[in-house]
Image 1 (cartoon, helix red, strand yellow):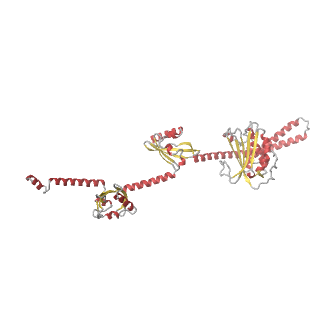
Image 2 (cartoon, rainbow, N blue to C red):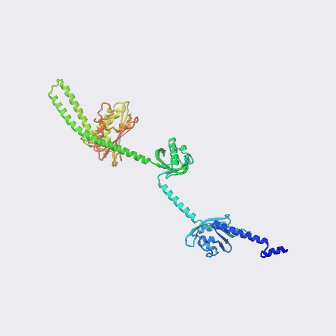
Image 3 (cartoon, rainbow, N blue to C red):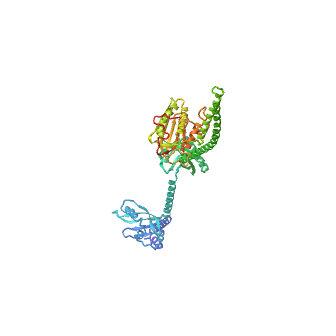
Length: 535
């Protein structure tokens, strides 16, 4: 060795320069490794599988709340702290790797902290094998993921609550972008969807909805994205499951280019509103008829008293005047006018429900069969009258003469509505409730005999139907307009209900409900079999 080399070796403590460089490089490497571990915040472990001894880094111990000297280097220090519910799963993951079934292992589980609580750990590692493939050493890291797991649990709980809320809502919810493309949806029932999901997801509103509805929806979406406010709802109607359903849609901005559309089925609401409207209209009609009835009843009584005087004096005069006297003809005309006025007063009393009734128990089937001939004569040769009533149609307690007049009035009206001929169908049956029930609150209970009179005539519009039972509102030229009002009054005075269904060109159907009576007495007011009845 030269003198210079010896001097250099002496100054560096007797070490060759190459060895010093290697130690310096190793020290720098260890520093970088230590710094990297601190930066990663990971706890490091190194396990000698043959001896069971483990090196636990200070950070590994710190994660579990221990100081550097408080945990020994034994594998049981780790195993004893694994949560009992996680132990078998963790061991299975390690065993699978040691058996060569996976290139490394990674598992999330809980380790017991010094204070008795548990920390969630993400464990990663791998093993070294000898030339025969037998593992002899394993090393890896532990990362504290407790905060992440707690956040995940909170998010999962929030998601569960949100799903519960959505499931409890009757609304369908759609996520839609600015162009009107369906991105996602939620529905409490698949039956509410007009189309299956594969028919609308990823497609635009204009591709799957009628043009008018799609246009209005796109305008509301644009306005919502521009203003960010929930705008007035859009109401529309679609066929769902074989029936027309009503919906309302509300839009709310959920992002710069997305909205949430909340869709609610309001079919039942619309039907309830319509039922209320009809009920209120029916109530107004009933009150109007009650007012008119009281007025006409009072007028009828006074008019009847006056006509009694007129016809009485006409009879006295006719008894004193010879048959050949020319003035006799004039007096007879006065008497006839008085008798007609008396008939009108009876109809007014019928409408006001103040006429004198003589109710009897009738078997409705036998009564209609006996009356069918007279009704056919009244209808004329161009109109066919069909009567259908079985023996189980039931019995009613009613005045038979007034019922004959009511049916004759309905047949007469039907005949006038069919100038070219047609068919009138009269039927009777026992039913358990009144249909329709709008305007009747509460609906009447018990069993009823439903008497139906249906024709193929010209029908009526809504305005005419609304005034059908008003006095002096006649459908026939030359009529006083008291026929149908008297039928209405008779039905109501007898404890029944009357409804009319009609539309232009589709005929008219009168439905009359009378309370069913038990034990019909065929001797009281029933025409005998084969009789043509009386008008």
